[in-house]
Length: 351
Image (cartoon, rainbow, N blue to C red):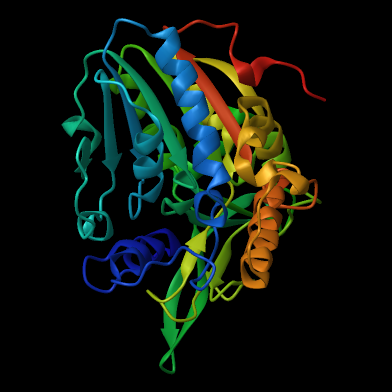
């Protein structure tokens, strides 16, 4: 089968897929860390921006939608910080078991598809590492021909094979003016653009905040910087390139083409308001107002253990904004559809 179909099965098979497992893959003792799982300062910052969104949509119903919500932790923390009778909170995920195991979710609705979210009012559309989890193809340029990598079995072991790529992938590169070098690998999902366009088509008035690993297309498919593509596997806090190992037991991911998302948004009337690294975005929306960024002399510590825990928590929060942490590895795309263009905190110049 094609590697793209292999990824679909390995991640989303209803019984054996990676995201169908009972164990949560996200967290410091799990397979990988995300911004929301690293520090409570992350959802605090998102709630600060949602509060700004609410103030600018005064008099309307406004809905926070966490697309790909996982265990629902982020939408719960945002909801806890926003007290307004006109606010609605939705977590959307195709596999909701982890989120639904939680109880006492008053005011939060968990659904499997976006069409279950009410369309009225204004919507704050949030996603974190959603698009890099979509099934993707692995391709390689051989002379004048583009090949697609497939997964086969040899002597009881999974291995690679190559087939001439379907025309749809040749069309993808031709339409974007992208030329791969001889022997260059590229990882891409045709669902990036299609899904993002569907998201923005659903809602008439929205602010869409997309956080993910990725680049604009000229950097993503750079013949020298990313000659071997961006596909990677994550397991037990380790990243590696053995993509066929332990199907269903490791995450498979590829960096996103943010140019695809911008194109999709533009077709649905959404304007790009911000595109930059995560650190700049979080700083601009007020992450340093969180208590973990308070000066040390203002923090009361009663025991040594409490002090050690605080040191670690402060270090985790700083990893979101320091130049050698998650804050520069991920990028944020903010698009507005029928919302004010100027005046947002994330549009102020910080550095």
